[in-house]
Amino acid sequence: MGKLEYLYRSGLPSRAITVYLYLADRAGQEDSCFPSVPTIARHTGLSERTVQRAILDLKKGGFLHVRGRQRRNGADSSNLYTLTNVETEW
Image (cartoon, rainbow, N blue to C red; front, side, top):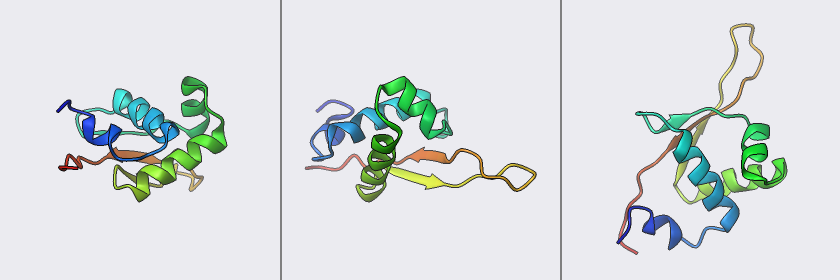
């Protein structure tokens, strides 16, 4: 079974798989990254709303943990996305 077979067999919509692969490509050693929704949308060709739905799909499926971040002045910043390793037998 390929490394991402569990993702492909998960039943997630293609939007979620696209966003997961984008985040995986950007993630560092800690399997985390923090691109903004507009950046993800621009790079994947998806709308911002579709990216938001994909992130919800990934959270519900256990593939992604999302943590809000704030700037020093208290303003919201982009979220921190951490990919989870959920390689299970399907």
